[in-house]
Image 1 (cartoon, rainbow, N blue to C red):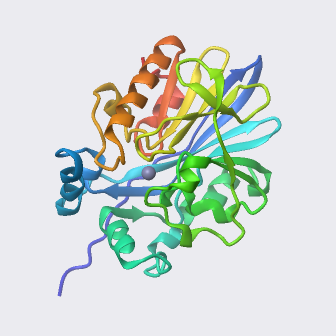
Image 2: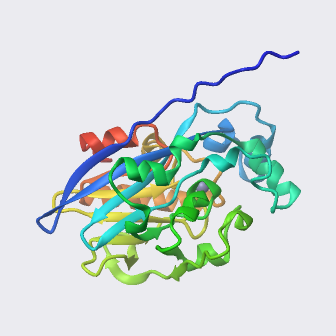
Length: 297
Ligand SMILES: [Zn+2]
């Protein structure tokens, strides 16, 4: 009989910082809703084109357990959140029962989750003094499971997702959405921001913008919080770590490597003009960079 193996998942403590926006302090929180390990060739591309996808399936090695960050902006007009993280129900054998067997097989083989009931977002929010009902708007970077599973805690919130991402998702798992989930599909407007040009303004003062960062999925977006002295860029899965964008390393997970390279170039250009803290959803060091104000460039 095989010995039962107990895995000690790393814990990524929450971070709270304050950023000045139009002369007023706004609190920003990072909370990790558990952890996820992925196939190494999913995190780092190995081989060209379709071979990079085959190499993910063939790979028997996993990365360390990475955080699943959710970003919370305590805006005076209402709390704004980026993505909704993972939930402990992902451990249930029937969590993906509504999906087809191939989708289930791929998801179950690529990702290993380390999520406990104490990691659930409703609890994490209450620990930092925010009621789930106080969350006004949630912006999705994209519709992968570990970014959407927490939707269920926010039946009263407005959700926004890029129109293309909603209509042409890549490996989303719609059977896991609550029946009431009806996100607002938004398009970017021209002339909203330098370098990226197009954006959807989340706040009327254009200080929080939803910008196109395709590559991981074709409709992938990021959220920029434009502070008085520096910006925060919540980049979802544009890259898994800051090192990837600095070293021009691509994730095997991405649907389009050319689009990813264009997005990397735009982010680097933007960060060379405006001091920016680069915050991917699964970067173990992202919380520390937010706390210590470490810029991309
Ligand atoms: Zn993703």
